[in-house]
Length: 270
Length: 309
Image 1 (cartoon, chains in turn yellow, blue):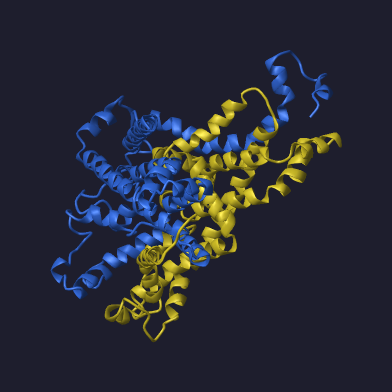
Image 2 (cartoon, rainbow over the protein chains, first blue to last red):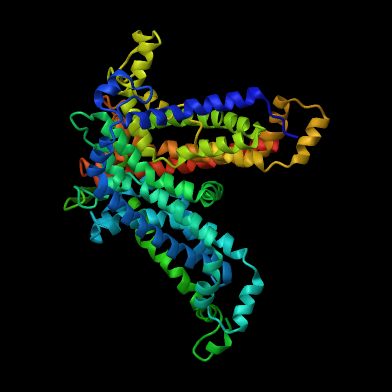
């Protein structure tokens, strides 16, 4: 049996406190004006300046909207491409199946920076420079490899008798896919959606090279250039950092389970 | 689906016939293949071709054979960049193989269910915070006299150590590695914990019967059983360390001088500041080759260690 004792609890809590302290300082500092930050950066101090959040939000509200759209489109593309391919692999045996599967999964071996430059030229040539779609497609394609892998395993686990029953009734692939497989696969769809969404939302490098100016600037770029107000100073920046993290935190606490299983499965398969 | 219904329309025999029979299956593959082919694989193959050209992305486009690769041999930035990522990779490996494992082990052994669940969730939450937010937070903590880190030193009587951590070539690289201290709340923690949790209770009972203490139990029972997770963390740390971009880009932009440059920064700089797309592609190809070699070597080493057991 496992044994626990006070020493272990205290050690774990201490390390937890050290690990969390920078985030705590960020939260406390986000309510402070610059003078308060100078005097006491360590802990909450009155008065609380909620206006820091208003100022920061004013600067990054449009980028947040951009990021929401980019992430939404990216997630949809990932789900569509992954689920259809995974269905094909899970349900059928046909010539070159393993070759195609290899081609898709091999993508996981290619480091993003190796194709950064040609991918940029390619997207630019397709007329997608500084557009929403140009930001969304490459990271969506990147996550599709993982998505196919995770979904194929899941689809293969669906009971064979369900497929057979549907075939007996004369259902074709499209109906089996949309009517039986997808509704039964909500957990894996949620996992893939969350993981790809996280990656697209946080994708810094690609957005940096493929966007310019404010037109489609995502929040991950916008937070690097938040300007402090005269009074608020760095407090405004800290408030902005928190605003940028909040959507993901909400998502995490709303869907902890698919999140955690996505993180572990993603790493294990990769 | 039944193939008979279509037999009248399929011509020939053998392979073409089998392909035609499964045309719906291929149709289902189409979205993924089109997406990956056009967005990923086409650029991947052109990367090799472009690396042989002197190309500014617009009008200048000369074939120069291995000229770009030759230039890399004498490029001081390349030498420093690869030296830097080897240092960063070594540090990241040393960190990720120890501290998160210690914490996962501690959390695993916390007996109180509610405390354990709280800690599990608590150490996972930072994974959800964008990396960029963490980097910017640390940039703020490093900054100037009033930065948190220098203030901490002043308050603890170590004012003499106050330092422009990111502005000094001697400390800048290590200041970048230090971001995220104590580096416990991340993917490695999650993987180790998942590994520990999947160990069967029976094995613990056997270990208890044999009178193994916690230390011996760790090295002879737990560590061997989470070897898969350790291998994963190893590969993951190595590959991400070699591509590190965000932290040096935001914190130092490769400076002061070129002291914190990395291959990724160099690629970005050459392509998007100097419009030297051919040269940048060549750096990418070399980076790819280095990563492949490292992956193979590490896989071999880990396998050998296993058979020695």
